[in-house]
Every structure is written in structure tokens, then in C-alpha cells.
Length: 210
Ligand code: AMP
Image (cartoon, rainbow, N blue to C red; front, side, top):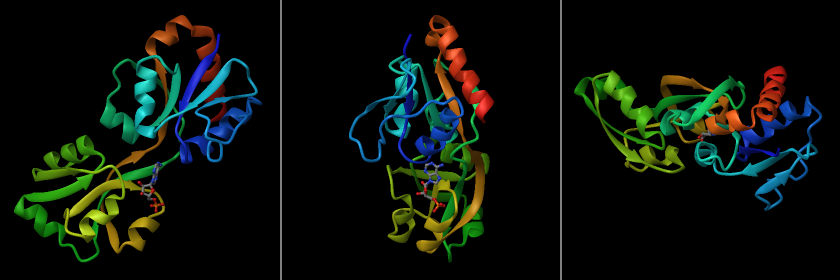
């Protein structure tokens, strides 16, 4: 039975390759140069589909992919309905954090009790500031969050930080860590029952490799 694995380009894809290699599974096209969205592997029973990171849980939830790899940042926003998350693969690690221009007086703004936040991570940001007892006006963005406080769209951003180089290059600083992020294997609950043996063998590969 063929198993379909949903991945996204970038760190998740590149850090998944070595895990598959431990079971001698080679990915037969490079999605960074190929325009193909369905990519075969050297295992005829495993194929990969390339989708946007935020769409991985959707493909898996509806069973268009049996399994997928998604960041905890995406899973927090999306929810885990219909998904089983057997393994934290500990790849594509980073943190989700509040960041602001170097000269921004965060403590003062928190004391005043209201802040404007630009982010792709609406739920995470809302929960974070609610927890602090601060009213957050959230502005949803889809990318280049770092720009927002530089041009007056928001006071702060909530975004992923890895090396911190992007913040530094834009005269921003990390103010508060919200949580640590890594990527998890997600499995369609129905597929897990109907393709138990095949999915369990893929889970075992990832379990052993991590
Ligand atoms: P850095 O400059 O290394 O701190 O990386 C920050 C930029 O990379 C931001 O634009 C983030 O949205 C993005 N980023 C960092 N880590 C990840 C990750 N694990 N997955 C996806 N995007 C990331």
C-alpha cells in the first residue's frame, strides 16, 4: 500500500532527508529545483508531496496524505483535530518569540496594558498577551513580519527566531521567548487504522533515526 508523506520546502525537507536515508530511502527529485509536487522515493511504497508548511496538517487531516511533518508553531495555530502525533522529530528547531525595535520600551507598554502585535501566529500571540493581562491588537500578516515595527504597522512582532540574524539585520531584538519549536510527525487517524502495518513501519524508521 502506498504511503503519502506531506513535507514543506526548506528546513523541514532538508532535515527530513537524513532521517529517511537511515532506512536507505532516497528522495528521487530535489523540490528546490524541480517543479514537481509529487516526488517519488527509492521505496516504491512511499511518495512525498510538497505543500506549504501551513497546509501540511490540512492534507493529513483530510487523508490526502497519510502522514506529514509539521512545526509545532503550525500545529498550535491549526489544532490537532483528526491527527495523531506519535513522534517529536526534534528537527527544524527554533523558538517563537516577541521581538521589537532595539529602542522600544516594552516594559512601559506592558504596564500601559495595550500593545499592537503583527504576526502570522495569531492564536499563539493572543494567548501569550492574554496570559500577561495585556490587551493585544493583533494584525495578521503572512510574511516579512520583521518589517511591521520598522514602518509603524505594529509595536512588536511574534515570530520564529533561529539564529537571530534576521532580527539583528533589521535592528530588532528578542524581548521574550514564548516557547520552543520543533517539528512533529503527524498521522491521519483513519489511515493509521487502515494502513497500520505500513504506517507503523514508517513511524519506526523515524523513531529509530531521531
Ligand atoms: P534567523 O535569522 O536564523 O533567526 O531566522 C529567522 C527567520 O527564519 C524568520 O523569518 C523565521 O520566520 C524563519 N525561521 C526560523 N526558524 C524557522 C523554522 N524552524 N521554520 C520555518 N521558518 C523559520
